[in-house]
Length: 357
Image 1 (tube, rainbow, N blue to C red):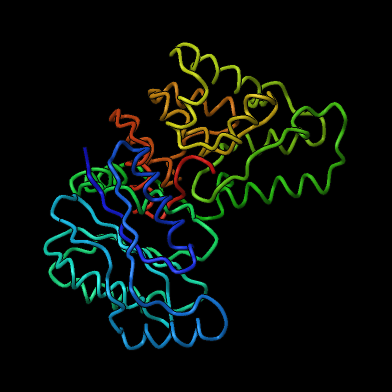
Image 2 (cartoon, rainbow, N blue to C red):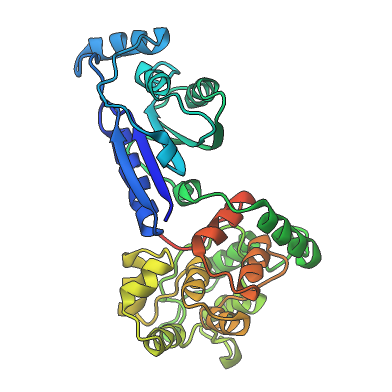
């Protein structure tokens, strides 16, 4: 089992919240995560102008605030996450003091900075310089009060270079880089559908018009048939051959029942939020986004034909003109159903990750 340390300094609680989220995600992935809040003897005032003036001065001068934590053996950890707020474009002196006290060598570090608008790049750069002799694997900047979709990919252990090379070979052999004007591209599909909505009055008999649908992320192509089906359905005249939305939830819950799973077994493994899954369960007309459907297919460990069938029921198709589709197809063909490994590979290629929040 992987053992991970999340060490952090938090003055107002924002960095602590991120540290706890990171620990939770590591534990969900089967790892062991220890949280260590860096405690110091001297801190700025917690209110008034002194908070900013003293805090900024302490960060600029990197004055040692005195670490109160006892000695900790960093060698017992496979990875170390180090979190910090951004003060006047710097990390608080507590971070540099912690590094000096623990003397890490040859360790894999993941740095996260929580900013209210300060220079987080400068903060991370200076911390990297203080970690000479170690390996800074990833860095991430987050705004106070919020998390981002990339946090999962940040937390995951890096995929091997051999795997990335094999995925790239598959991309080179299968990815069809069509021009942006292709009708199957998500952006143009959205334009067609929106134009249809504005130009054609909705009819009470149109079954697809009232169906709620998750927003479709960039990078995952919709099938051309689905574009025409939605276009036609807003006029109330979609032919039966284009009724691709029919039966998605029925098929999904049939697959879940065949495995003897509870709902939570599926949506947690798929990295899908309880709310989105509840929408699918409670409303047969609800249609999730393509990333959600693919995430569910991965959780259920469907083969390629089964995945295509599930996608078709929701009005989608795998397209080799979509880089994200090709990457996910690689993992399905090779029966690698670790969604976090898939998401990190998607992240490496600047593609939308699977699942929903």
